[in-house]
Length: 99
Image (cartoon, rainbow, N blue to C red; front, top):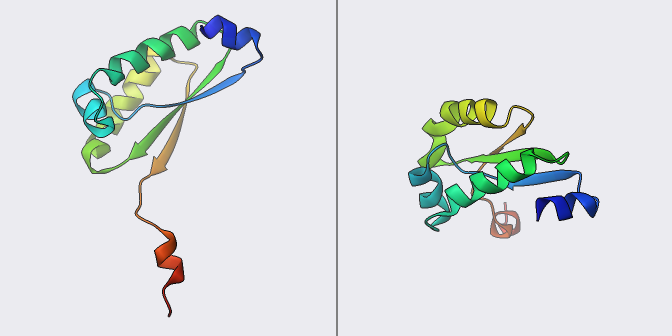
C-alpha cells in the first residue's frame, strides 16, 4: 500500500505516535495494538521516498517518554522528522466569556 501511495504522489506523511512504548501509546489512544501497527506502517513508509514526520503530542501520560521517543526515532527511522505539540485545553467557550 505504501508503494501505491508513493506512486500516487504522496511525498510527506504526518503520523502521530504517542510514546516510545506500547503501554503508553495504546493507553493514550485507548486502542490496544495500535502502537505496533503504527510502527509497522512507519517502517513501510521509511522504505519508500516518502518523507515521514512523526507527531508527538506532549500530555501527562507520555511526558516522561520523550527522550526514549527521540532515541526510538533516531535508531529506527533516522530520516524521519519529529514534530512536537503540546496538548492544552482550549475551547470556544474560553473566547465567548465576557471580560
